[in-house]
Image (cartoon, rainbow, N blue to C red):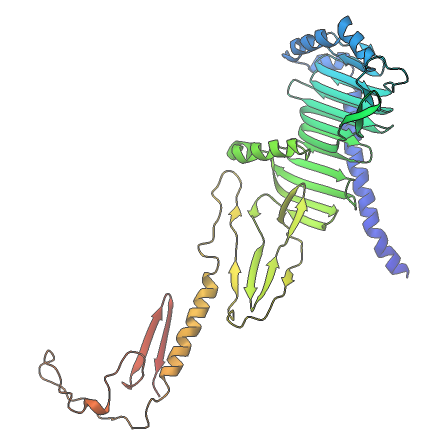
Length: 440
């Protein structure tokens, strides 16, 4: 009993260790952003257009008319400018000198302004840094978005008392754990702002954490760690990725990235070299964007054997290098004595052409042809008549060009290839298979 108990504890310990590792990476990265004060940020800042863009957005959002309208609809909103932004209720833009917007919404948005007893905005949304940031909070949520340097984007959203942090340096980080926010007209529901639950990290240094959703960290677009708490069994992913994919295969990478972004599945410009997944529906999986594009299948006697069956990881089905073969039985088909093997093409990195098998079922076809040839030769080796064959060799003729007399031919028909009546050997060549049968 003690041994069994220890076996059950090991997976839990690994999961707890993985969760702690991801949390530690996220805390270190986010802590780095939080501890960088204004002076430190200016020390590493380079001239960028974000300040001027931020000034334009701030002029639109922070003026008295916009603020009065926002109060009518019970919103807290602020936008940062190059000198730092204001602090409006739960929206805090004082730590941002780039393009930063913070919004706090009520738990339900009433379209009728100044309606009595309508929900008020509760929560804290904060933006920090000289990059691009957006933070959204509602229902007491705490959302913080931090980004430094112009090519950096951090977004965070939190609802119902939950917490979300996003931090990015030359990259992108998203941390969202928001609930659906109804939109009402005179207390009657007319629509809703959908819930968003996702974490995503990509770039030189990016980290994100969203309560009850998960956490992630990415370094140099090459080392990727992700914890997914939305699955029935929480899943920890450790990956080595290829950041050069966007250079050698931009069409595929950008199309895939845009599709995932629109479907809320995260954003990346790299391809997986190897991704190890622990937990989730697959329990244990090793997948890659390179190598086999689909499982290997063997069709034999009416059944199909699937080698490296697929695992559903991050919205895509890929062959699982750690999965056991899957056998799907069918009605016995004796016409398929030779197995037919299907090997898909294999993708290669660095823009190299994929490896495509010349003929996926060529080995099995050759075996079947050889089998049919052997059956033909065995049948032809069986004597066709009980009449003994003459052992006397034919008389030689002085002129080979002249026809030989065939007076006695009616008792013995002219030999044909493969009938074995000539007493010599029959030779049959099929493709690369050569079969020789000698009459007994």
